[in-house]
Image 1 (cartoon, rainbow, N blue to C red):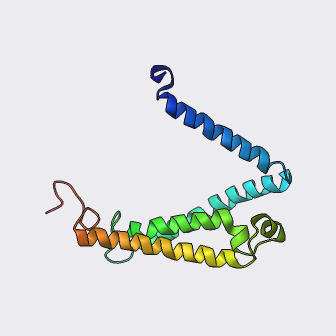
Image 2 (tube, rainbow, N blue to C red):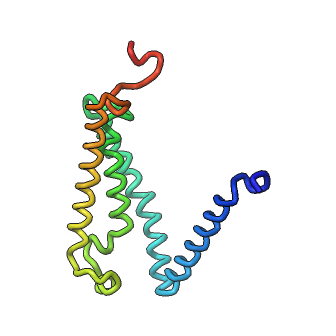
Image 3 (spheres, one colour):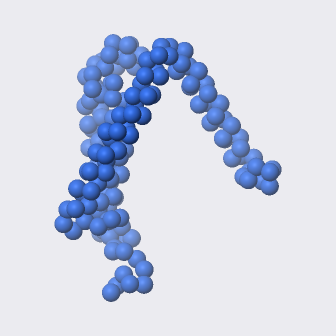
Length: 154
């Protein structure tokens, strides 16, 4: 099978199971209002490509322009939690920005808790990232050292 497929049978089984789960989720998702779902997908793609990507690039360029910041150093301590927090906001924005009654009935949670939960998760992501970076710097590990290579010490 490895010669024909390129990986083992476990990989093939997991891949087929994930396709089945995605297909099931798609069928369940499209069971409701198909037009609004299509508008959401198209709007999300357009919003991401025309508005968010330039904002990502601008924020990253501004962060790298700060004195003492080099690529791969402390900058990733802020990039990773910001990207994860942004992804959470992008996926859950209807609930975070003001849940509609339809979502409130579906989740079973009261309105207004989603913004505070997202803010707490964002704070936790930044805190864990900063602690991870500080632990690496204190340990003297790769996270606290400069660039590697033959010219790193020069």
